Length: 456
Image (cartoon, rainbow, N blue to C red; front, side):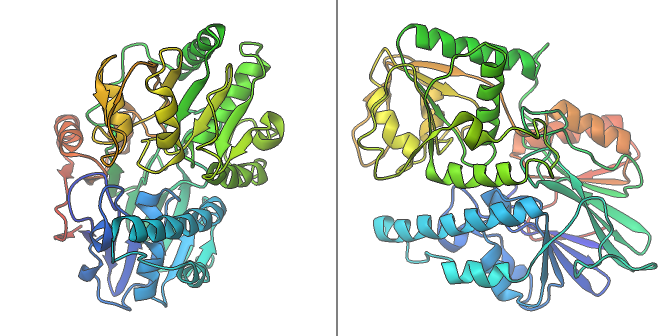
């Protein structure tokens, strides 16, 4: 068994990893880097000769895990692509949206590499996608594993977003478990992960929040209460509340949270605005409500909250009306997205409220706002003049990633022979290396170098 990190750097980027299992090759995830452009945003697939991959296992539909999949399947047309039903449905939406974004970027920013694949390329890739159940050993071709199968894969609920999984690969009596992105606590709508608790030789573990200690006494229920009170305070001042959110995952969690607050009588019914991509994904959450690992199985988000849908053409006309919620993407307020364009209407208005409910890269427009002080100038778009930050900013922690403490505790309880630390920036990986080396002296803890084959 051999492992190769196909990312170009040790960071949170275009997640993809190669497993060589005897004469078989398996790729775990096929992401696209959110901060890079062109071919440089893809994993280093030059390390994998074309036509040599037997199976591609996709843990979930976020772009940093699925965004280069049509590019990869074009190089390996015979590979079976295994994923859950939720990832299958959402991945199709996300990848077609990605084509649209790349076409716009080619025209606006003259990125000649784009698009890396076309809408037709997404359709051709999707023909190889196989819907897989949870907790059932499968052969590399996606069929139910026969007795004595040499190599099997098995998906486990990861609690991150709809359809998200960890994946267990068994080969000739040895086992490797890849967490993908995971959450070990219940969110508002997604239930906590249900992962293997024993029998894992090698653990490949995300480290996203390794440099973010959990505040003493923090719990999600209290954070939801604090959020609800902040919305009430804003409405009492006659303000609107603008919340930049990711279309996948964060939008649906936020809608469920708003429904709960209304149901509890903590928040009045008020108009909610969301974007078109968020709406398409929310339709999938509603369609799979009773067959997925989620809470509030009877809740139909679009029906029960009836949000207004905002298109890209309408955002320039939309005004921050009093006592309304604008939950629009992107979560990092990337240039040309709805939240970035809408922010220009509220940033210099002292009566407006801007809430952040998840992670934002420090170099993104959202990150720059979060680190600024009232009165500072903030650039939302390098091609436009900066604006003064005068609106009221509030921040909340509703991360869809496990806390570093819960990830550490999971690894300690599992006691694998090796732990490979991935999907994290250098400080995050360093924290896990220190903690796990101390707690598990008999376990080898490794941060795999990009492109270097590692014997397991």
